[in-house]
Every structure is written in C-alpha cells, then in structure tokens.
Length: 185
Image (cartoon, rainbow, N blue to C red; front, side, top):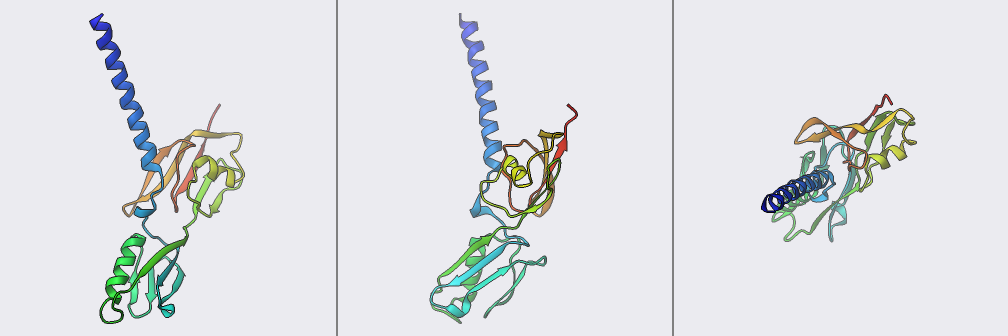
C-alpha cells in the first residue's frame, strides 16, 4: 500500500511539473506591453500635458531616430514606452519645464509577417491577443497541406533574431515572422 501511494505521488508530482512548465511556456509567449521594446514600423505618440507644441506622432523608421522638439535626435529603438517617457521627462525638466507630465503611447504596432502554407502570405497589422491560428485566419486560412504543429516564429529577442518552434495556439508579437510548414499526411 505504501509503495502504491508513493508511486501515485511521484506520478502526480511529475504531471504537475509538466503542467507548470507548459503554463510557463505559454505565459512567456504572451504579449506584455510594459516590456515591449519599440522598433521600426511602430507608430508612437508623445504628449506633454499643457504643451501642445511638444505633441509628436510619428512612425519609427529603420534607424529608430526621432527628432523631438527641444531635445533633438533621440534613438528610441529598443526602449520601452516607459523608458522613453523617463528620458523625455529628464530632458525637459529644469531648463524647459518645471514638472513636465509626459505620456508615450503606442498608436500602432509594427506588422507581423506570415508565409508558408497559408492562402495569402504577407504582412498584416498586429493586434494584441493574436495567436498563430488567428494570424493564419487573417492570411486567408491554412492551405490543405499546412501543419499546425510545425510552425516556426522568427522573433527579435534582445536584439537577436531567434527561431522558435511553436504550435498554432501560441501568441505572437509585433514584428514576428511566422512560417507555417507543410505536413506530409
């Protein structure tokens, strides 16, 4: 009886570990706005409340530079919206404004790209909450030869493009390149 109970306990612990790691993998794939790094193609808006002349709405170019009034050229690629707010706040504080209230918002995320076994491969506007399945639906759906279990995502992680094998219900990020592979069955 004791051996049976210990064996059952070991099986339960192993299953719990599998569930926890599967949940962690899914959670790591979900999109977190507070940690989102700005990149080329994003449209941002910068407001300094009470200062209409400091309003700027722009699409980030490949070099990631913006020309902000009073501060000049700023390289924003790789920054989070919060980091950019702090940078602008510190730049305007003192010489220009006593206590600037700065807000940076992302008006439009950079597009994602999908190719391979979908009916209309190409670039599409990113929307929070998109999964591989939803991205494929935007691209006209999967072809008959599409594999929903063999999908590769190329994602910029820390400035390095990395290939990640995912399944069809995983979340995608802005700027992801999705490759839906063929199945042979």
